[in-house]
Image 1 (cartoon, chains in turn yellow, brown, red, green):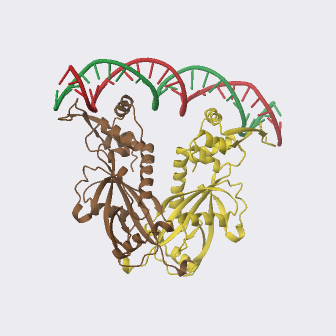
Image 2 (cartoon, chains in turn yellow, cyan, blue, red):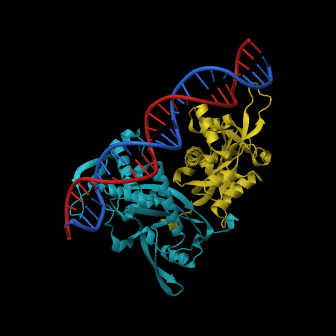
Image 3 (cartoon, helix red, strand yellow):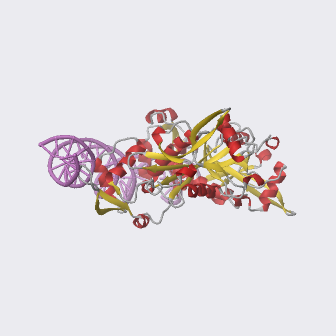
Length: 242
Length: 242
DNA sequence: GCAAAAGTGTTGGGCATACACCCATGA
DNA sequence: TCATGGGTGTATGCCCAACACTTTTGC
């Protein structure tokens, strides 16, 4: 019965994703601890238990601010993970108990998806924070059920982009080439896209405006830069916004 | 700081939706309590605190089973509600503290969406359970933030149906007419649909099979019945299932 | 016979798909 | 001059939206 038992703890975890022009990266925190008497090093998603008087969304935002004091991001809650075996690995429990100095039974975590412009967010205090961008495809075994959370986050991005492709502009640099944008879609959906059809679609989006600026010092014809115009977007979408 | 404070409690709430051929209904529980010394009667979504060793999904399923011992349902977690002011109304806090016989500070709730065939689920133990189907449009002021949760649940249904219209067959009776199905879409998206285009779309779905059975005793031409064939559906969708 | 809802086809426009060659640049 | 990726147009099929009249039935 509930009364006789430890309350579950509630935490927030952030899946912070970026795109470097070639592939998706996720921001992970390095973690060191002891597994029995063996020291170990691995990684986890950024996150923490919530404070008693803190809204979930506020906690997620605060975690973001703690890592990237300035970068803007697309931030959405996407799923709550609450199975008991999240804390099946004693290594995770010991690590957390040591970190928060209290007994931990079970943790229900609320996962947030954050999409950031990786170029704006390259300069976090990486020494202090032990934060690291890791290509999603190269992510190893993470703490708790963070691998699952990451996987579901990637699916969530696909859903969002399907519903409204504009979300990709949170990931692209302010000035981007057509092939960066196309590569993003190709990586996300894991399929090649037709170059001509893709550029047709791009030019049909009136809020993607071509600049009079081109790549420099590339060993081939220089690609044109584009930018996303948020005002035009809002105008052509009746004021919708996330 | 977290350590000095009461832990948040974790609960599960279910938004159980049905469609009676004309409109959406939500299943609500009657609640009686005292507001100061004034007795009050109102309604809430079915839900409860989770047990210490209970997965969230299991809790949601168990709540369903408690109300409809037999009915099958489409069940999905859709959002976690965790703002502090969920428990802003002292009436709610007092009611809950009285129900669970413990002090309650804050509650983080995980909301589940359940779509049921209302015809299968008409016969719950309504005396015992105080459960009631209420047309969504006529729902009054609910406990906690349950009005918000209901609103977001309806949006969620729209999303699901957009992604894959098959989910509506969880709501329709086993045998349904074309106009029942059309009305469902019209109610859900709050817009009229073209009758001919709709029936064209229906007949293009090979998993919606027309029966040799018609309405009876209606004061107009009798409508044909259709049924949803799950096996055909799975075949034509490569084995996807929710 | 009338009121009420069921059923049924055609057309046009827009959107996605498929597909191949020349261009600019640095090495 | 060559290797590398950038940029461009047309033809086809499909799906969606628009639109009106006849049929059946109970009263």
